[in-house]
Length: 83
Image (cartoon, rainbow, N blue to C red):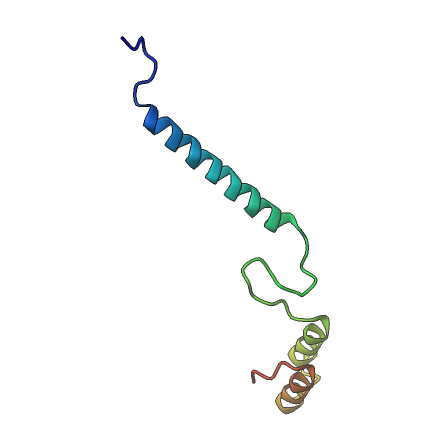
């Protein structure tokens, strides 16, 4: 007789393994989220945050201080020549 021990033991090790993997993934995600190491300007989703010079350039263009041609030229100087 088993007396309640040993029945379906195969499922218990699988549940334990899945729990360990889940906790490990959660720890890795939290470390990456709260690491604060974004010195290269990269956000969590992989997109690159514009530099402060680019933000100032965008603000000046939005205020009308620069023409479209000047804006494109200065973006090319900054190395961001998508336009």
